[in-house]
Length: 264
Image (cartoon, rainbow, N blue to C red; front, side):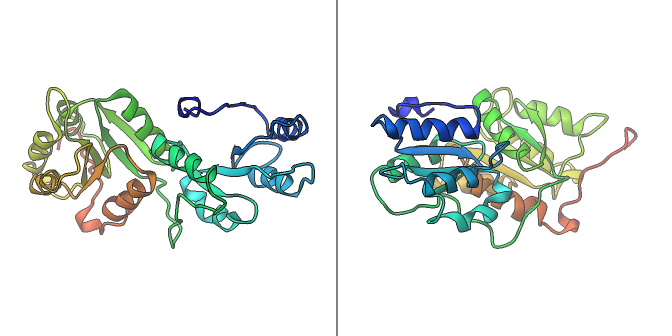
């Protein structure tokens, strides 16, 4: 990903190796401009790597440091911005966050936080979401993002698969659906209409996913019975805000997990 942005990249597999390489690069007159490290690395945590770099007098110019963290842990690391680190990213990292981060950090001395933490801790443990998405790459990114926060994910490749899972003899037990609008065999609009016609799914949270951001598209989502609309590529903060608001925090009377017996 970084190489596609025109960056010269050195990849290491341990925090100590990263520190050694950074010092060596400085000693040979080719210092790194940016260090990106995971927060939860073994041996040395990302914040400790950052501390050692910022305190090391061998660096004529301290490289910018970006920390990659789980979304749920952002609030823990946010106070480090401006002292040990220069930016935070959520895992998995996506292009729409990484590219502007690199551009900003390498052209200005101002610190930047790409993610503002929630004012209250949120947990998605126990949440089960049906992800309806036909594009394999988008499917993988969204699923990894959801699972990184403890969300159970079931994947459907099109609207017909959604109906097969929800209207069969053993309906899927879920808390909500992330529904791509443009899919083969059956699109998200039609799948939502069919689900809403079933009394069991009148209040099931359904969130529309689309690359189109026009007001007409958003209104059509609402008209079909979707609770909200998210634009692709998915931004982690927006995604989890929507899940928290419309799926996790929705009153039980309007968001009962769908559990049916085979005889239902």
